[in-house]
Amino acid sequence: MDFDEKVWPLAGGFGRYTRLVAAASWLPNVLVALGFFSDVLYTSAPECPGETGGPCEGHNSSSSNHSGCSGGWGTQSWLQNTIITQWDLVCENGWKVPLEQICYLTGWLCGYIIFGCICDRFGRRNAFISALVVALPLGAALCFSPGYNSFLVIRIVFGAALAGIFLSFYIARLELCTPGLRLMITMIGGFFWLGGELLLPGMAVLCSDWKILQGAITAALFLLSSYWCCQLLFPESPRWLLATQQLNRCKAELLLFSRANGIDTGDDFADRENLFTDSFWEGFPRPRYYSFCSLFRTRLIWRNALILGFTAFIGCGIRPCFTRNLMVLGSSITYFLRAGSDLLACIFLCITVNHWGRRAVLLLCTILTGFCSLLLLALTQYLFTAVTIAISVLGSLSSHAVVMLSVFFASEVLPTIIRGSGLGIILGLSLLGRASFPIIILQQRSGFFLHHVVFSSFCILSVLSLLLLPETKRKGLPDSLRQGDSLRRPPLLLQATQDAVPLLSHGKPRADYNPDSYARLASSTKKMIKRNSTNGQDNKALSNDELDLANPSVNYI
Image 1 (cartoon, rainbow, N blue to C red):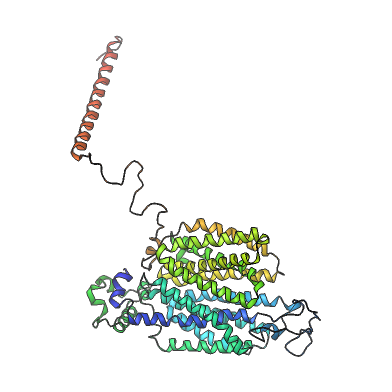
Image 2: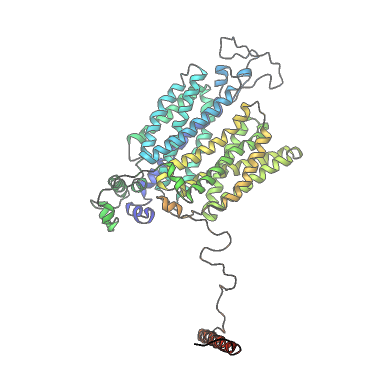
């Protein structure tokens, strides 16, 4: 059943209530972004005298206060107390800082996968509630962490819960939108995510201590309890209910949307304009759920998911190669430059994707990312600092656009029944690429050049694979595996309605063309072929008779 054309318009489509629910789904992006980017501030160390040219008197591990560095800490513009100053993560303990970053990203990766499966099995709303129940107590427990090890364990699970909140809202928001509005509604959610990123430094200045900042973030997350208590703010996705054959719940949700949108559907939504056939509603079919393993029984969906997961992995993995060149400007300026490039990437996608299509813009951004990366690899030592910074900002912009568009593109090609688990895997791959940079730092900062070369090569390789993707612009979301496999890639040069027959012209017919003359010519040709065939058989029979007369020794009976 075509949900976008037959079912959703009768429930009001993107009416006033649906717009309200979509707008309400933007606010959690701000709160989750505070938790995601807090790790940047928690692991940001104040100035060390040894790193700024001053004398370093060494690390005093026996110091009773929180600052065991006997040389003294310098000043920092945002947080005055981080986990580095809290537990003396310097010198021989410096490896614990990238380890914490890796573990936190691992928590987000696991959260995307686990709560993605919960989205497909128990619904988008239930996935959000379970993630929120985990996030709130653990967020408060982080403020009272007695040591580094306990902080690390709680931080992993807290990151997984935040990932579940983000994923459930992302999918539910997408499934409410009509094809023409999906991109804009999703990009506005991206703007709210950037709002949280830009709001975080101000909160850090006001709090000055990482524990107080963590408490403020947890208190902000507590506002999401209203989405749990009030189902009108976050209803279950009717598209998912219908795709998994939960017909009674689907009828109830559609009635809720139709009445809230001001559409009079009567008592029974199923009877309106013969929306569902009798055979569909009879028998009360049992709900049918799918897992991510169902993806490998398809022909094209798994290939599309693999390509888009690969590009998301590359986009996140190659971005530190650009931000490293911005560190000469200072950590604060680098933070805002990165956020500014993210903002420009969102604006660029809003302008171009609905006009040129998903595949073309993703191809353009990937090529631009690879070009900037190769320029920095080959010419960094010959370029002025300002030129290097400009190329790095452009590369950061294009790489972020690659990640955002890859995730959005994947949500459109994955069918509803496995959209949660499939999108969770792809978002997890993007975080795997993001974790590659702290892994290098963990290895005493060896391998930066090889990391840059490898991801530049991957970027060029992905350009070829992007040509195999379908185009989803202004198309409905696939709900079943069959619909997902029906998404084919468009031709590269020719229009989809045109056949490439070299000897036939597709232009206007010639003025001297006469169909009757052509019919007479065809008839005459057939007669000639038939006459020649008859003459050939007569000649063959005559040759056999002549051969017999030439051999008198043949006995005839």
